[in-house]
Length: 131
Image (cartoon, rainbow, N blue to C red; front, top):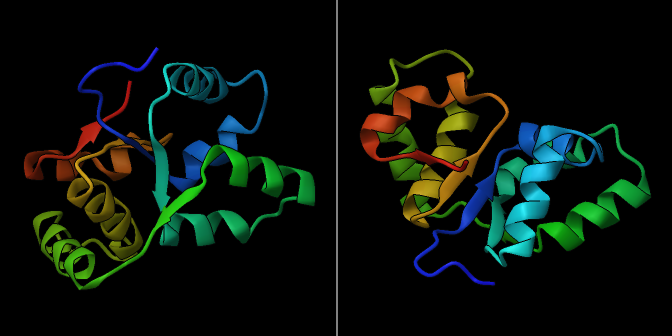
């Protein structure tokens, strides 16, 4: 069943890593979204972080099947990420999270993360978390 009006879901690196553990809460959520035929994607930055591993070929192939869409970082995402960086208090080492959040925002997607506290400051910019 496709849920009418359901937003796409963008995965953060932390969520994808945990979702590959078969009995994790993240795996259960991801299975549910896939059963509901939700669109699953992630930013190329988050995908690159994921590929840094450690991971084996089986995990990488599974992740590629589950998350076939990797959205590029264009000028629009970079500009939105800079706005979020300033909005979030210019926290040191937070710019990658800003790019991930900006990609989700510009795609009108919900963000699935295992580290919501890293992204809470972007809620006032309209970032929604996937349930």
